[in-house]
Image 1: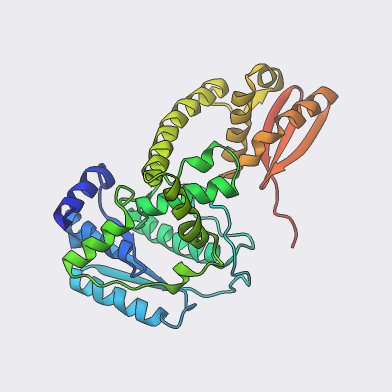
Image 2: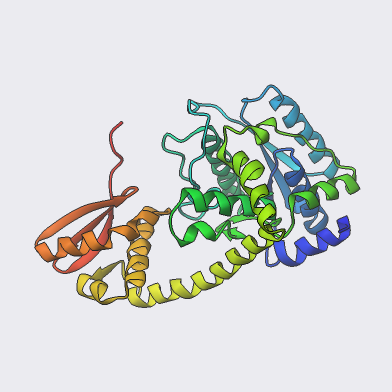
Length: 340
């Protein structure tokens, strides 16, 4: 695929319905370099800006920043550089299950920081929080360079780390102000695009560090799956796309059962098919939490047991959410942060 063809694909699939201004999150890697160049070509440099976050974690961080500055000078794009500060988490291994796609704003334009997460989670929260802030200021959308290759890795990682249907949905193309225009292209295609356009990029050595779960998925699990079937990647992506379509239907059923209410009669909940009851409870919990609470669905039986006892009862069902049962009605409440 030529650079011009790839631009056309992104215009038709990745940026369809996206109106500028657009803030591109730029690390200096091949994917974000490709993203910025395509955005400028399709939208114009005056309607595109960029954000680079310098975490100061790597010896090459200063060179990464200068690379992004030079790239933006070449493309005629305004660059905002955020130097990350504050206390960093001590934990550097593993990976926390993502709340939203590798990050999900709890409310439009907002971002919830990690609660004692690891280094990658901390860095992710820093850049999304700053991007959301700038986008809100400018009434803009903000874009990441996530590709179809990242999507496959996300699905496999979440399948292992998170229970429930949502683990297989992958990252949506749009979440509030956040857009992911490159989900229709692969990491190999972004590299080919940059080479054809004469665009250099920076390599982050941490991407090959096997202390991180994402690296182990990329280097170990996915090659094994491709050895089982050469179309493993495309089959995973197609499965995720089908499940997202089916999720829209299921979400409609939940909305019908709730009728716009933020509570439900326990008798009604008890009469629902178990799968639908589980989805209703998850929806109520996540509506209050503003983020994912997939474990809430496993507490339906306990909630109904509380109802049988009568009176008022409360059950912590995961995250920062409590289920309150009183007078035959279930509603969810936001719990205060735990001390320490």
